[in-house]
Length: 383
Image (cartoon, rainbow, N blue to C red; front, top):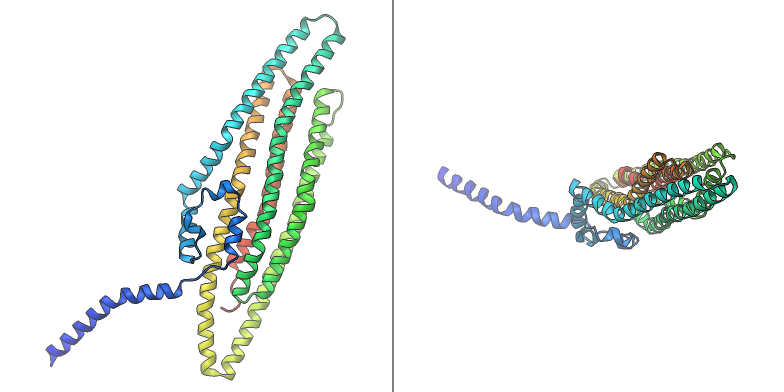
């Protein structure tokens, strides 16, 4: 009897030992989540230079593949490769600009030497003015390339936001957060309007005014426009930061409050179902918890993936501004070494303007990052 029992237990153990992996694989396939259809249109809004760096699994409709791609994208190796790729794409242009600046500064120093050898103060000053004006015109032409790059990034950010709205709405609605879906999409719609009407249309006039003041100050040393120029830049960035702060406060408050209201309404419905139909209500509650876990998994995967995609989209423009700002600073140091005061002031102004453009990029990008962070951290109403 004992031998028969021992044989039965052994066979039972071996049976489960070989059966468990198959059952686990089957459960893994059953619990796999399909991504919403709005995921692929969002990927299509990402710029081509960023899409070339992304893993192929990211374009799959299976959540496991997208999760694996997100893990690879968040690794140090992938991020370092993306950074070095952006640096390599901008390095040639920065080195060419630095060579042009060095050549122009040497030419300006040579003109200054020739001017000192020419008799007559009026002729020497006219010659210096024409030489400085031509040199500064070339520098301004190079500087506007950075401004156009920032404008293009704001246009891209607007396209990404338009593609992100349906995806956020679906992910919130899947978890029962209908109020949060409405609040989030309406807040981002206001953000798109501000980006298009305020930031996108004002960045070029703002930079033009700053460069015009800087040019007047460098060509006519008798006019002190430094204080006025500093006031214009500070007030512009302060107004931009204030508007984005209001937008972030509205988006955060409405999303969190709406999510809390959705959760309370769903819990009340589950409580009523559990009391009116005890057995079925308990089964429905367990089923909703399972669905909530799947929705939370999708939100985390797509939310973190979207944040990484936004950072990768920001990276080329960010590297461009950092490298060109460093180029202007090196040029200003060289101008100081050669005694070119007018060119030094203008180069320093370009470097300062690059810092304000970096601040504008960070302020505007933070809205989308926070909205995706709210999506990841917001609990599902059906949980």
